[in-house]
Length: 486
Ligand SMILES: NC(=O)C1=CN([C@@H]2O[C@H](COP(=O)(O)OP(=O)(O)OC[C@H]3O[C@@H](n4cnc5c(N)ncnc54)[C@H](O)[C@@H]3O)[C@@H](O)[C@H]2O)C=CC1
Ligand SMILES: O=C(O)CCC(=O)N[C@@H](CCC(=O)O)C(=O)O
Image (cartoon, rainbow, N blue to C red; front, side):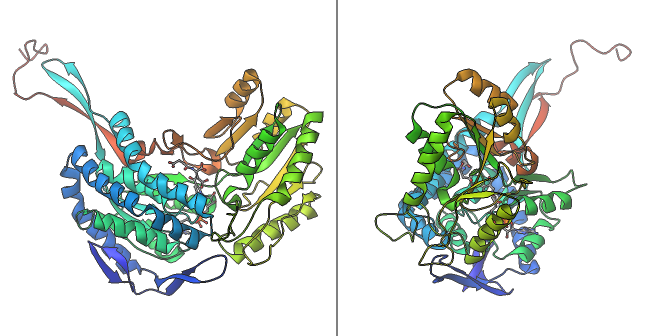
């Protein structure tokens, strides 16, 4: 099977063979081979050759070509959603929202590019000072497995719009969704070399990230990999690096009227996508109150009712399997090590019948544990901490090296004002889940969650750089000359 897309042509990759499978039942979804370092280099060269032609187009001309892609995504929305469900395991209702986000990204990115990177001119002497934005050149895009369509697309669309050319490497766990996206780009009629696809795992990633022909790298994935890339890009001020990484996100429940609403928000924060979102709440912080003890009872009553299963089941599940049986094993191992630290299991994460990758939701009380490790557990395990008051809740929320999302449940505006100001995170919400960020806002984190280059609406900022020009159509001697030059 031809799985490299380089310079507008599908060619065979000659690295190690690999496959992707339905995480629930192991059915094969995609089979191909990893791109070799030489093939990665050819892809970067193709992107370089295509760059001048693409960069010379106007923003409106590039936008028109992206609109053709948008129309194709709309046309294939149901097919894309089903492929996401098959390859990632997420329920169809959720995969549909991802496919929708993919085509909505076009309009939002055009608006963001116009607004954040629009041309500005001010008179200056006989001429004018003008600010415009230019593309970096050739950029690499790495995607994560959990949003294999929407999140790489969140780098690719603004990058192309700004005039960059792209080499994309999807997660090795989701090559089929990556390939589908590229097939649609091909069908949209993009010029050859403007977007290129290479497939593979770490080795292909290393080859792409270390290719000296790249002007930038836009990465969404784990903090471990992001940190490696940051080290690799150290001492390279000539290259732009945007890192969207993991989180260990706090949800603080302080004060509410409707206990069911507080429970619903918690389920959406901690367990959506089986806990495999960078913005999922990993920590539930409860201030001491009678209401919060009632909330906990209601939460514990809700957990057994969460439906888990294969995406084809009816009624639809809320949670599908994790991405693999190994990923499920890691969550169970994390639960066991938290128990060894003194965590009290209130509701255990357990394997469910039907699939080794299928887990139910879990809740563990870490209040009296000897240690609370600051690790991202990428699965449906929520860690509870009781604190004495609201100030202690904020302190506990900030007890992390990550800084992606944080959410507060409270009726009081002044609580939120304080929480907002003191929370160290790139997404801070009030009476809303930690998940479900808007494409019309910046999306990124601080600390180990990001390198101050947020994506979504602000992706425009890392896709182009501002250029200052002082311009005058005709050359003339100034009306007032500099002393000494009369
Ligand atoms: N902040 C954000 O916007 C988001 C962050 N994430 C984070 O992503 C993680 C889950 O995604 P994964 O796919 O497991 O992440 P990952 O870090 O394992 O992989 C991400 C990408 O990097 C590549 N890669 C891995 N090692 C590499 C290396 N040494 N050099 C170059 N490339 C390499 C992978 O093949 C993949 O394409 C979680 O930690 C999650 O929190 C996920 C979605 C959104
Ligand atoms: O990039 C955007 O357009 C908005 C960000 C977004 O969609 N975030 C999602 C998923 C990210 C993740 O956690 O993997 C969210 O906030 O739920």
